[in-house]
Length: 209
Image 1: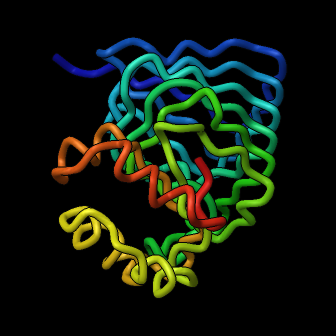
Image 2: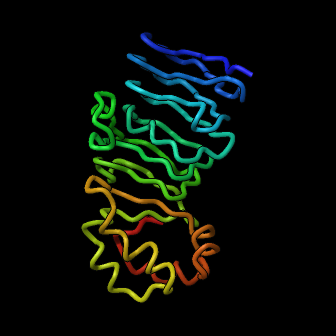
């Protein structure tokens, strides 16, 4: 079966609802696309979604199925947007070193709201985390994880979580401004409990939960 290709590019769209939900389609957002005050409904895998050179202003993203490992957000400008739904392994913001291509020079994120999203292993690159609203517990977000890595290593974390997550924070890409994890998921994977994690997390002002 040949996938249908759907293009949105070289235009400005305002106050519209875009349904990107057809499993048999590949959606291309960009180039030179500006979406303002739009609702974008996503129900496709990352491999069916291509984003580049797009400016999203005051848009709402309704993620209807888990969106995994979508790095295309770092080829878009996100201003005043809201995210709802589950995102895993996604990166947002400015990360031009990711690939030496012009589109990766344009990524940015500011004034965005993730309080209605569930984020797991998501990173925010080259941005000011103070302009962002992160999801609440059981999600938790490390702010400036590289700069605070030594301080965080000084706490007595559950052994496996400490070795896999905390001890690796300083190895994140240099532009990593924040990293969000999901306590229920990492507790299940790394032999601990959300309660054990929270007891330590609440001691640090560099962790938002």
